[in-house]
Amino acid sequence: DSGVTQTPKHLITATGQRVTLRCSPRSGDLSVYWYQQSLDQGLQFLIQYYNGEERAKGNILERFSAQQFPDLHSELNLSSLELGDSALYFCASSSQGAAYNSPLHFGNGTRLTVT
Amino acid sequence: SQQGEEDPQALSIQEGENATMNCSYKTSINNLQWYRQNSGRGLVHLILIRSNEREKHSGRLRVTLDTSKKSSSLLITASRAADTASYFCATDGGATNKLIFGTGTLLAVQP
Image 1 (tube, each protein chain N blue to C red):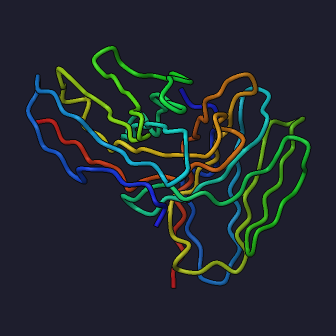
Image 2 (cartoon, helix red, strand yellow; image 1 turned 60 degrees about the horizontal axis):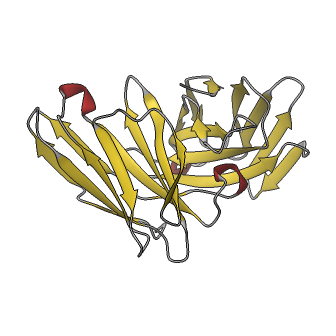
């Protein structure tokens, strides 16, 4: 058990809808990372927050947004959903602000299916 | 975009054999990490090797790093059926704070 909790585990929704994915990091970790994993794109880095502030941005679409709250949990909001957004969305946490300096601890992901 | 490319894409071996996976990356790095992913599950960190290190061991795992060739290898010795998983390398690209994962090697260990 990594200590990172993601909810929900599965989400099925229709095109054009909006969903929110939630992540609770491992106790004591200040950094939260969001990744998208799909068969055709592999594991893509979306965004990182460190202690409430955006720290790094990857291939995150404008339709997607995220935030980290004072209690350090994070939410990833996906709007105007398209079929191609169907994927596994992972949250990871680490103790440091620099991703390369320490291991990332991954949750078990939210599987999003857009129909 | 992928920073790292693993080779081979898929590998099938018998229990007890050694498995070697390779990772090549494009830019200079601070560190390189290896992760394992069981089907449909979250990634699990295996080992971190710093750019000034050449080799690192952890149990049955041995990682090497050649920064001049921009490549790394992961060796799993005496493999077990439970080692069946996808293995990813991840690098930072040197000047960025992003941890970018490679395309992964799917390892199947036959009992």
